[in-house]
Length: 362
Image (cartoon, rainbow, N blue to C red; front, side, top):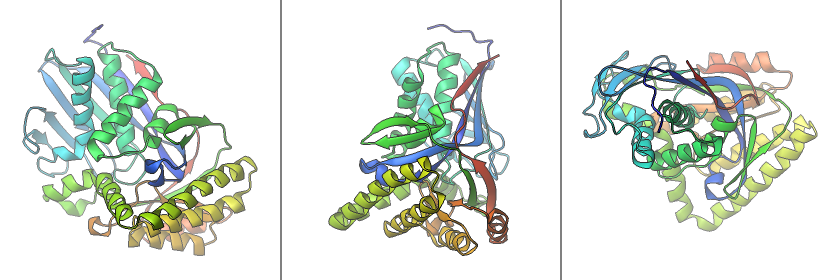
């Protein structure tokens, strides 16, 4: 294992939107996702003191700096916070699990080296845009390069997917595949396939991210950091209770994804929008659409959108309904952006496709 402790590694990965099939993909159904032109960067460098120092500098509405000590109990790390959420170590559970995984699998970091990890992101947290997968992929890639482990893209993707599963309990391979490869990805029966499809112009409306109103409520901050896990567990519980009903819903989602790919190939955006609306209804049926996101979807549809749906994990009303909606706006982009901004959403125009993981050594 080659070590050059003077070098600095920077790994950059894209955000993602799931166009079709979120949640259903966990159970073997097809899902289509795309990279978008918002990125997260992890920079790894050496420091004089031993151990890991983590700085999350500028994620929207959230900043955290802390010494991360894996041997301590949750909540016992020394934290220096830009916005004081107390010792909210669970908010960086993915970083912590990435370090633990690399130590166990590759022996990385067992020599007590001092490592500085800085994360900068254009991706809002807890918004369904792949912030956790992006963090896992970029952290894994930067640390493996820093410690001279190397490895191909598929190995990085697989490592990052294992980390998401360890933190969340269950996780689809979609997010980590997009963070790694960029472009478009189809996941079918657990197999990741890269697709070449036309670029789409979309509008994303985000509700919340981690709200400033949390203040010193460290329990709430920790829960927000693991929002996806709670939502995924809720779907699993409901599926176990209503098995035959959920099987039909999941089969419908699988067919919607297949038809959506053909619609993009034929540039049939009217059909694509209609399929987005249907997919949203299925997500509502399995219980992952909170009121605030539902209202954004309805506003967009009434303002002329060709289609609108929740993207990613969705949200929970008891946690403020945070999450994102994805809109195929057609000719109504300005009107749709205006109504979502009036409703209090963070609104972004995005393009699909684009580069995946990029690693630079300084």
